[in-house]
Image 1 (spheres, rainbow, N blue to C red):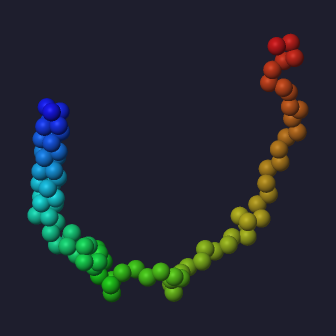
Image 2: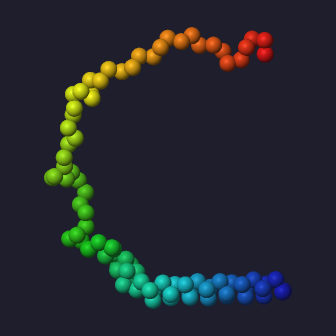
Image 3: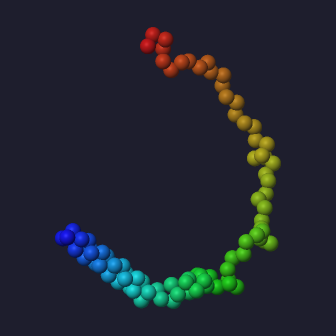
Length: 87
């Protein structure tokens, strides 16, 4: 019986704290929260970024000297086992 009373009191305190936090958030950010709930979001429709290719996209230049740079050759090294056969 006492455990049930303690659990009910703990639940009531948690619910009251949750409602207090929600009311404090509404008090501080009322306009932002209500606009988000209405679906307006942070950016109004005309200022929203659009998807798709940009008409002002710049392609990077290809420099032939860098593209055709010779690659260093690896020296031929005989590989040895990491553990000796005696181990």
